[in-house]
Image (cartoon, rainbow, N blue to C red):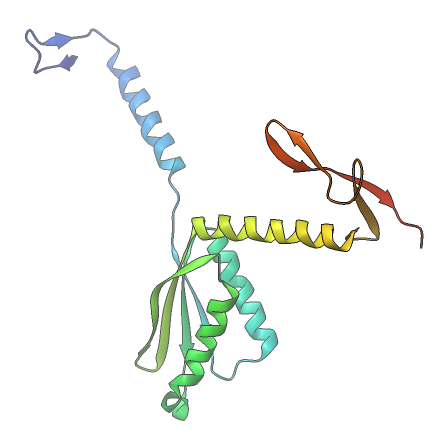
Length: 182
């Protein structure tokens, strides 16, 4: 089999062609397995949606975004509801507030016939920064309250509250956990 036909002189290798074809098929199969299939999921809302249904549908949207899918959010208008597009816009704004930090708006909400459509795409950088922000907020809350969740008091090792211990050049807050007596 020719390895480098453009070289001077051309380079050839004697090999088992069946094994070569098998290895090539295995490499192609492995590369297909590693690719992710990103699809577009759709969630449909109505202008008069109740708070429970809204929360359930929005949780599903978050789940789809966390799985890496794009989400098409559709607000469907029936009858004379179409003359009040502001109701649909309000619903899209509420969705945007709840998914803040997880996704970015790929297509802003626009009226398309009797439907108002918005497309959301997962945003990995925003997700990582929001997770870091929530983690630091939780640390500050625990440090300021002096109580960890679940009736367990967290006190820093060493002298007073907030004692920092040097570890590999970085300031680290070590916590000692004690059970509180009711």
